[in-house]
Length: 298
Image 1 (cartoon, one colour):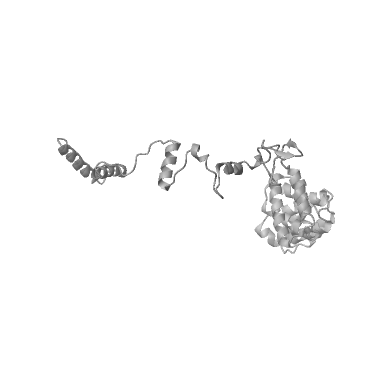
Image 2 (cartoon, rainbow, N blue to C red):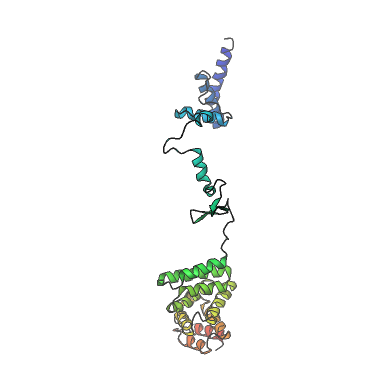
């Protein structure tokens, strides 16, 4: 009782402090919590959080749910009801690989044998030896077998071509790119393939990108993935409109000229191809033709 006036004065000061506008929100809320605690007769709104054992947590959960769990000593004397999932069933679901004989192994012809196959198709990492991980070559062979003889639409082939070029630009694996081209299984699409490669060349004017794409073009011709006619048709799509193309890509005459020159130099295209493409250029600007001609040396 003697401390009541002091407590009242303390809380009066707290009221004054909490009313100050420059007071931080953190301190203001702490003062508010103390005032509310006093009004509640010093009974906290929330139970203090303390560490609890697993048994205490289970007991609280059972009390909240209104259920009673029998002790293990009594539970063993009761048989499970029909449809009830027991702990043994849960263990069996978690470790299906241990189904079989008493020892947990598959029994075959009176002998114990290791088996890591579950339900005929799935594998368990807990029993027996794991199946071998398929190598990259195995995956390629499987993909090749699955797509062999399959017919793609022009849109699908164009999408696949752009995808394989993107992958090739990052891996520089010519053999894999050639394999992907063969999987397209469409000779009629090959001129379009050349056209897409040249379009990519015009979009990738870096020295590395240029060398990779020209190398791919030469390799396709060397491996007979594309014919001489396919190469010519694909190039004509760009060179016939080289005058307009050079407006958007000033380096187009040089880039396409380098690609044609590389094909001629590697012997995968006749020397006459350069002159043929030059003569077909529809341009009133002699600069474009001159640039193309100077690269080819004609």
